Length: 175
Image (cartoon, rainbow, N blue to C red):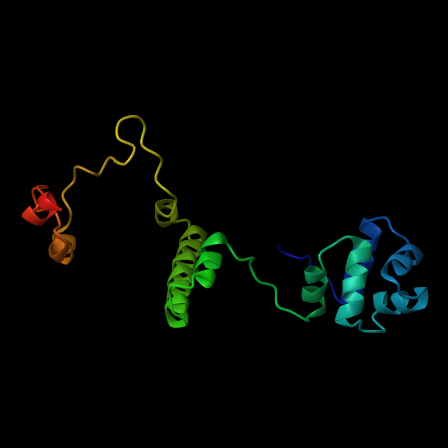
């Protein structure tokens, strides 16, 4: 959510108030502050507290976070997405593991944003989910018939991985 850049919190509040077509008196009444105090805030003579900003945000029917960011009380950041929320709430991994996963995920996102900005759509397009298979086995994909790379096969060997020709080993046939 990008906020418009204005000189001060007072100017921002005035801009929001005029866009909402609310008079100074109406906003002061809705926010529970006096007319002169709100006027002084809008003119940059007073710096409102976080509590007053919250009341003004309610009066303007806007996010108090937007006012906090504009006033410099908090930094603007991207909202959490489902992936980050899932990582942060998973109780089966340690804090260090959470941080490593978040760092890796953010590095992928940064790489894709850079590729998108450079006009290299290949990297960004690869980040999109593959289309669902049409008909046939719902669990198969067009690359299911392709042999696995040798490095993967070596890593999967202790788990009864398929051989290079795709046949199951004796452990997988039994299991």
